[in-house]
Image (cartoon, rainbow, N blue to C red; front, side, top):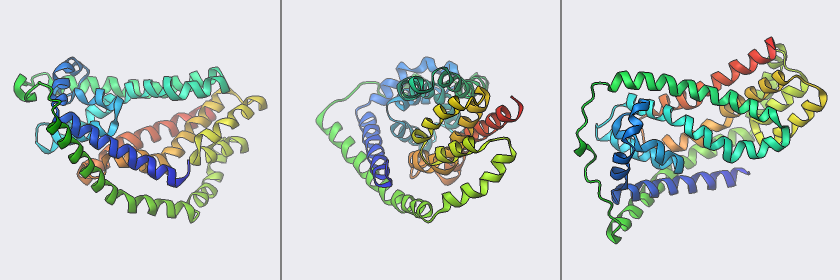
Length: 306
């Protein structure tokens, strides 16, 4: 995917998310869904945010729009948002694995794809467990009247739909104005050779950590394009590289991709314009920083000690 295609994809996805969120709010579907998903509160999610994980599976952007509105209205606190988003990672990971990851990698590298999927899923499961414990303690005495959701009737009238389209399109346009300069600034850095410079700087350190030349090639390739790097796993298998080393290399490659590209291309657009800078920074730390730390730690441990 070229940078132009990536830019158009991000803008289109965000526009869709804003319009969908506005339609869900204006038609009353959010309130209706909130009442239907109240049982999810047992997983440590604030009762007013239980609809967010469901909407997230359709459009993460729309889910963040709904959550940010509740935050602005003072109905939930930033900590409630953080717990909800972390809890949402587990079902999102499951969907990603069976819809995109395993269908591509399972025919290519066989059982190693399953091992890596379980390795990554373990992190999200641990987060879900921790969030559930914290959330249950946090909300054990919370009294939430049923009317907190407002009307639970769905309104599919033409005025409601038109208002949703107008509001969504307006928010999407404002987002594009903010995001475009940032996107092209990052692209400029990449085109200027910033990534290649960083790769050269990192190679000696990766070598000292126990990665051989083929594994380093995979990591630096994955930092730019994971699909291209996947082909190198087949080469590693033919070279007889141990499974633990392949899994460690994949983990570090994923961390490099998240560090150099994923956070600004896929996460930042969901937060930009919706949250204050402090909350945006925390969300990036939780959604990008923690997985990067996990992947680096597990990857290096697998290569050095197994």
